[in-house]
Image (cartoon, rainbow, N blue to C red; front, side, top):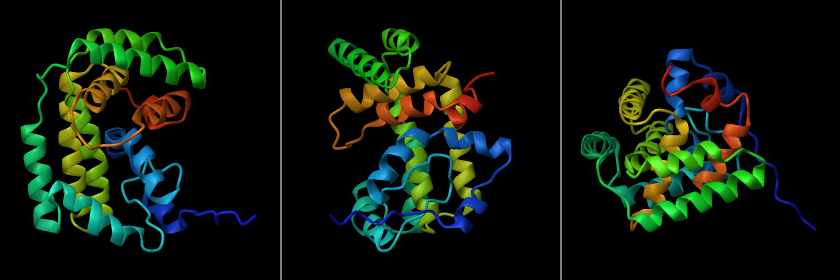
Length: 220
């Protein structure tokens, strides 16, 4: 049997992705989407706390050619324009259908129990939060990382976008469980072609005492 060669993140990436707390906390936005989606792209674990993502071999070219254009991003100008407009237009008041809440409750319960995490807080959040604004917040947190990693935006722009996303999250959600539920409301309740397993990555990060989502609270 021939196994897949293990991919490891180069040391220079690990050294670069060391940030002060005021910046590091911003990486909570997009953390579980990054962990899930970047692993699909690269087979790499642990990228959720990185701003500069590592793409082995030809993966970056494929993301640039096939994935980003689905959002209208083809170069640096369009990256800034799309992200800026998306942040401004994000919907925080749209409501999901009642059956979506029931579906989200089943999803968070199953995912939590599978990993041995108490689902009480997530279920309570699902019964409270009926909007889906965090769906785009977390996706944008990942897209900002991708655009920076592919040199479409600079580091200052990346942190600026992440700070805008953080401010929006703190304005609309009390904690990460509410944020996650709002994301899942969008993932499950909107008719999009966004395929992800965000809840699995979220639960794993919540179980990890050292993860950013446990290190930094959405509100103090």
